[in-house]
Length: 86
Image (tube, rainbow, N blue to C red; front, side, top):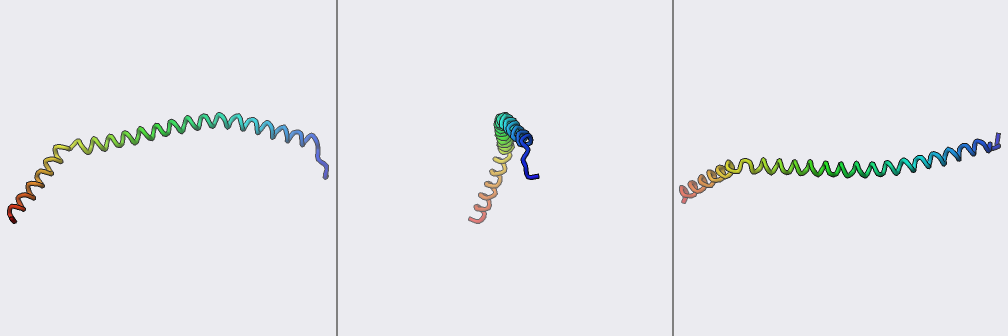
């Protein structure tokens, strides 16, 4: 019961070497694919942020005439009130 079978030891060592070799080979492929995916994800996020910023800028300045008229009317009211008080 206490003896070690040499065939079993040999099989386990061969399995460990083959498993390690396959794992190292596949991990190199995964590393390359992971870097490519990371680059694509970064590019996508950058484009989304750029698009969102552009949309916000367009929305901000799309109503420029309205905003100017609105500010002018507020300024006129302020001047009228100041003239009434002064």
